Length: 306
Image 1 (cartoon, rainbow, N blue to C red):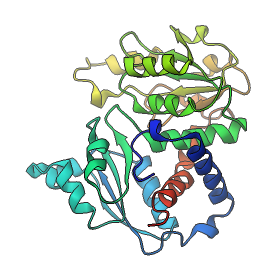
Image 2: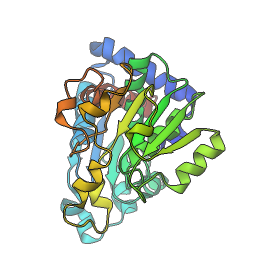
Image 3: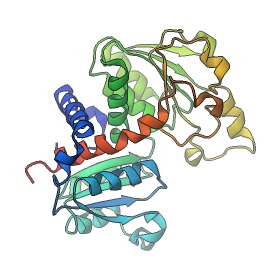
């Protein structure tokens, strides 16, 4: 795996290897303290990020490597001078052993991968893909359920512009028996490419209009926020109104099984009430913490043999 651009490129064998490696990192962190000693990793983020950027930089430090970083690269890097992604990546390839990149354009990671001489790790590209998030999500689900087979998955919120839910669906298609339930406001549902993907894979998909239409025995509710930065126009007050259509409260969770887990890629706005945080089924902070060992595993595999 030279580059990690999208979950669609990952095989089941590769996923299983990453899950096992992540689990070993969690159990034996000292074993990996010098795994990437002497390596330099560049993190370049053209869009704001807290969890993804800092968990990658934490992962880099824990592996004994060094990081060179640009935050808010759209404003602070040479992109402000009109430099192309291709030229930026060609230059960074001479500075670092791998590049972790986030960009607002859907094809940014694909473009970067074409010209880079070092591994490109996509840390989020527009509404297209967020493979490292999907990988840590898969690890989180596996730890809770013990298996990724026969997963009943609810994806809720802004599914049109939210790259995390799309990436997770595609990754989980590697396992048998997945059923997907989607819940969103009209016009914000899963995109045609994801719907076509599920049809080709034979994945059963049900559109739900409210929480009462979602089966009470689902395994995971994957809630997402309204991606206001990708909407050209949002009327004043519309974001809260839209998010409220699928907000998770204690009352909502009363109808679900004790084994129905709530996940969220974060940041949260209003779509999960803070009163839910104490529910043992709410695992979104644990999910965020799993980003460090999974991204350690991704970096190890990306630089394996290099």
